[in-house]
Length: 73
Image (cartoon, rainbow, N blue to C red; front, side):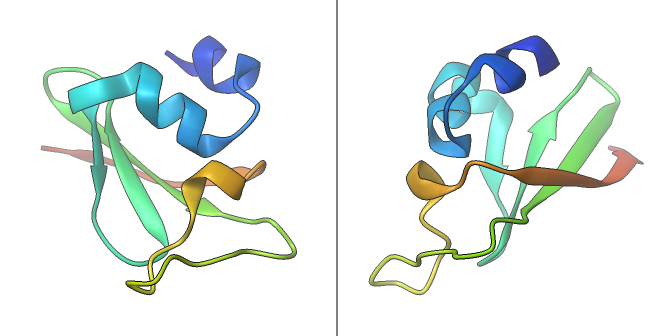
């Protein structure tokens, strides 16, 4: 899973690979199902972030993300 993230050009591309295992949970972060018991939260760390019309981060333009949390489901 993390190898796919590293190989992806943008966070949006990684979201497409993850499919149902990714959840956009706020305007600036998303969660990824790591296993049946753990979830990882990521945030964008690009210097110039763009947002969609609804105010959410445009993940198709984000090249750099940071892991901020791993939590038990």
